[in-house]
View 1 (cartoon, helix red, strand yellow):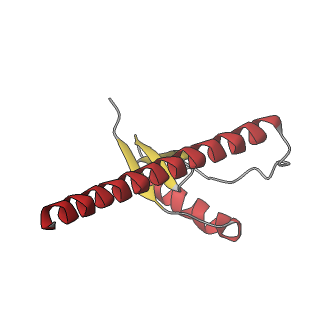
View 2: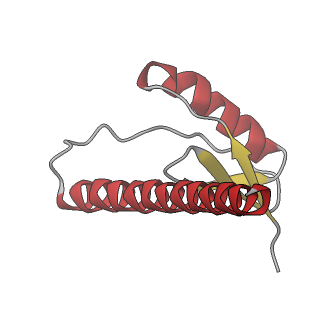
View 3: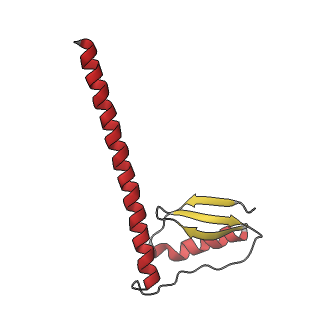
Length: 107
């Protein structure tokens, strides 16, 4: 079974070269880049150290695969936002319940 590692390291488009150098350094220590999720967590898999060079394909954004990936990212983000809203409304409901109980006990 291979070990995995996750590191939070978001980057912007003007940092591609710097980020590629960082990924190559990780690869030289045995951590090979496997992907990134929508919040910026970089996923790595442990293996033998290797001298790899990373770069980004600047393909047109209208590619079918790119459109599907962006749609999935937005749907994942929407799910996270909806879950946060549900948690906040549940918290507010619990606070309201405790206020009603406190008022009922004081009356």
